[in-house]
Amino acid sequence: MAYDLQHMLVLGVASSALFDLAEADAVFQEQGEARYREYQEAHLDHPLQPGAAFPFITRLLSLNDLAPDDAPLVEVIVLSRNDPDTGLRVMRSIAHHDLPITRAIFMQGRSPYAYMGALNMSLFLSQNEHDVRVALDLGFAAGQVIGSPAMDPKGTDLRIAFDFDGVLADDSSERVMQAGGLSAFHANERARAAEPLPEGRLSEFLRGINRIQDIEEALLAADPGYNRRVHVAIVTARNAPSHERVIRTLTAWGVRVNDAFFLGGIDKARVLRVLKPHVFFDDQIGHLEGAADEVPSVHVPFGVINEADAPPGANAATTRPRHA
Image 1 (cartoon, helix red, strand yellow):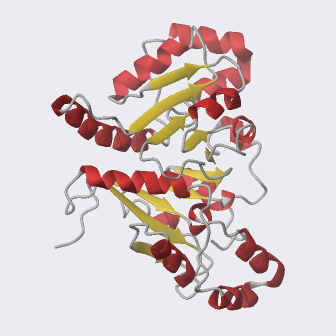
Image 2 (cartoon, helix red, strand yellow; image 1 turned 90 degrees about the vertical axis):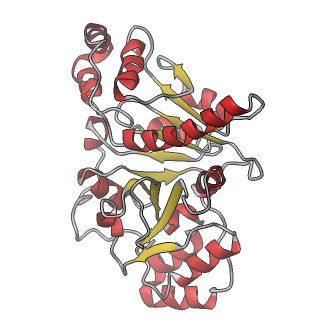
């Protein structure tokens, strides 16, 4: 019987997001592919150290203990620009760190993001901005991982934080903001408070997280002493009166979050350092840089905010991206 991904939360992760490949990447960029291959072979038995997405992926996979062994909730698949030979070090590092990841796609010099649909993936994480932007342009959910790994490796809970516009929702309201300023934005949101926003790239990922939270709610109902492991927050620059449309939109989509921070221009880093999410998704790189030294962050370069910032040739096949 085929392994069925249909009802799982499936993520694709590049080796550059899962592990710290800075040293290996420097060899590739400075000395070329042949020397890089030699370097990886020579270091085959040297496990790679955790990268920014490692704690998030580890916590996410640990949630499989909420379901029977034959019906896992989460599947993570490595999507890599390495060829199978140089990918051996990645797979050995996965085994060294006892990560329950057994599936991978290695495509020499090319990103496998095109296989996201075939593999039912709701999210692709990479450090390669080119690959992330192309995946987004194709309609997939993807983000560029930046920042440092979370600093509580021994815990069991999973904290996920999202920006709203351009991440969970589309960027239609942000376009009003960019065109008319803050007053026009608030007027638009007040007038359309009961009108749900169109879904953005990561709404389906939130649905998958909510399905796992549903299992936890059933466990809590059976045992009031059960401690929820998954916590989801929205951390947004919106504030009153534009907050109402966020809440009504989530309800209309049939999704939910545990907490919401409507900050109205307050530096998000101040909240994130207290919240300490294992991953934070935002479409504005400026909102991530302030806490990236402490908070594993994912830039979702989607929408009007990122159109002007797209590097030349970002969507061109001739661009030479990182190898991983």
